[in-house]
Amino acid sequence: MSSTAGGPRRRRPARRTLPLGEVYGLLEPGPVVLLGTARSGVPNLMAMSWHTMLEFEPPLVGCVVSERNHSHAALKATRQAVINVPTVELAGAVVGCGNCSGREVRKFETFGLKPVPAAEVDVPLVGECFASLECRVVDTSRVRRYGLFVLEVVAAWADPGRKNPRTLHHRGWGEFMVAGRTLRLPSHMR
Amino acid sequence: MSSTAGGPRRRRPARRTLPLGEVYGLLEPGPVVLLGTARSGVPNLMAMSWHTMLEFEPPLVGCVVSERNHSHAALKATRQAVINVPTVELAGAVVGCGNCSGREVRKFETFGLKPVPAAEVDVPLVGECFASLECRVVDTSRVRRYGLFVLEVVAAWADPGRKNPRTLHHRGWGEFMVAGRTLRLPSHMR
Image (tube, rainbow over all chains, first blue to last red):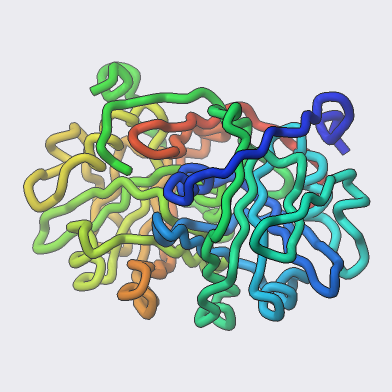
């Protein structure tokens, strides 16, 4: 595990309500996220990069969770999830979550992550992530074909101090691009 | 338009076949892409950030193209497209493409982009992009509900010299995160 995985560089982010109309700005850049689910009171986490916004407001997110993933059954059964957005300090935990299964491992405990109660769903937020989106599954019509669940974000939280978050963007086999500088150009593209 | 929009910093990339099994590594990090279409011999380009991989191989990509976009009708009619991946040198052209419509503007000419014939589809590649994916539309069942087209990549091209491409990741309203450093961690996550 990398030296970036834990220890003193992890700070607990502040957590404020994020207007639902601003959610897309968190996911549109394409970060790897930790998808939280819970079943029978046992929370689980999955590293997920295959997601896309489908609608601005209410925010709809398409998420690919295959039948091979332990999270698949929990999503189908509970129709609830939390999308947590980690930054580079959590790289070790992200890779850790991606390299084992909730069938065998309790991920919050194993990777030293703090479960924080959510407001609208029975799935904990990841306390160390700078943003978390509480979601309900609203469409499973393409689950069989692609593993594609459509989630509606019903409550959103973010650390208002993180304007340029060092998110992780997976290229495959543990290679990540770490978010770099910010570029602003005049635009009316929402 | 930014000083990064054109001029001497634009280099024409090399173009080699990319194995279809490696396509996901280009799109999974979440870059803004230039979606190319063509109708009656007139090519068009659209800046697009709402996309996700749906399958590794053959590569399937879900792309959200709303009815408001001029590209929507071309995608439906021709069932062909090219996903081009630009880097930061093309930021001005990307924002330019996103801020006008193919109804009024010929985008290749207006933004100084070179159309390059594709191998499998009747849509030109963007010569300045370091990677281009020739696609056919294979599923339109969620177009009415979400604008979600499923594209199969049938041929892929990339500049083998670009291992750490400075892709653009849109946060909204012309604010982009520019791809930063590469981080590698031991992992068996494809």
